[in-house]
Amino acid sequence: MAARIVVMSDTHCRDWEEVHPDIRKAAAEADLVVHCGDFTGMGVADGIRRDARKAVVVHGNSDPVEVRQAIPYVETVEVEGKLIGVTHPAWGGPEFELADLVPDFPGPVNAILFGHLHEPVIEGRDGVLFVCPGQEYSSFAIPSTIAVLTVETDVISAEMRVIESAR
Image (cartoon, rainbow, N blue to C red; front, side, top):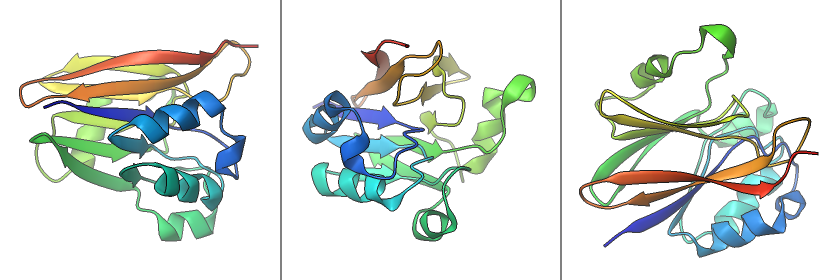
């Protein structure tokens, strides 16, 4: 049996209703929704938890104190026998290395889902699938994207979906 995970990050919205309707629809249809931080308001986290079958959320560096107090920085979830880590590193830029995310998790993980970069990443390295879903709003030269993972007992695959072209 396969599980479908919708991964999002960096919505930078206060309310779930501000998030693109195609993203909200994808979230409602997924087996699991993961938000990798930077909601900027509890309304997004609450909306995901309300509409999703199951949700995992972590806070990001742009989230206010009340969000940081209510939502963890790092989570690990097991899906179809695979361990998936979720985080929002508060650092980035030229010094960013995917391997620097691994110590955030107690023990080996099969995938790490993360936010903060605002640019989509799907990369396998040393047996770990790293996925950054990009950002969930369209701006500058960066489109709105989500990642969709398919998790089976023997494999995790990921694809990026463009929700809205860059403006």
